[in-house]
Image 1 (cartoon, one colour):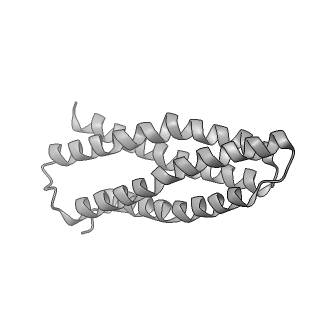
Image 2 (image 1 turned 90 degrees about the vertical axis):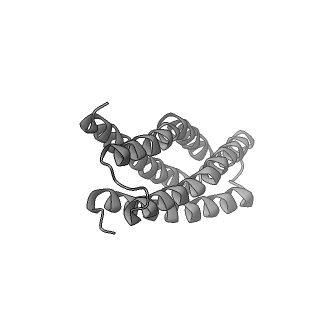
Length: 154
């Protein structure tokens, strides 16, 4: 593949990765804040599906295309912006993996509460707080990676 094609795939997949993450986070937060177990269950299910369809796919495509671009452009892997981008990407991934587990757990809890016609229990809210807490550094890390990809400042 030529450089432009790989770069296009890299930019497209980064947009899908970031956009899906931001979009699913927004809808999950909006759904959970309704405090309605049925809404949280339905939206939670769709968030999980979106994560597997889009996020998981782009999580693989990003490093493959990114390192291939570095290779094609003859950029040393030891360039500081490459090292920082890689480290921040790994940080975002380290936050995302438990987030997926939490989403699955929250969905199951919301389904059970919906069927029982009860409020979302304290465990759901505990998972939600952790989910938000993990999402913040992942979001910030990816914002910085976008900057580093474009500016290559260091």
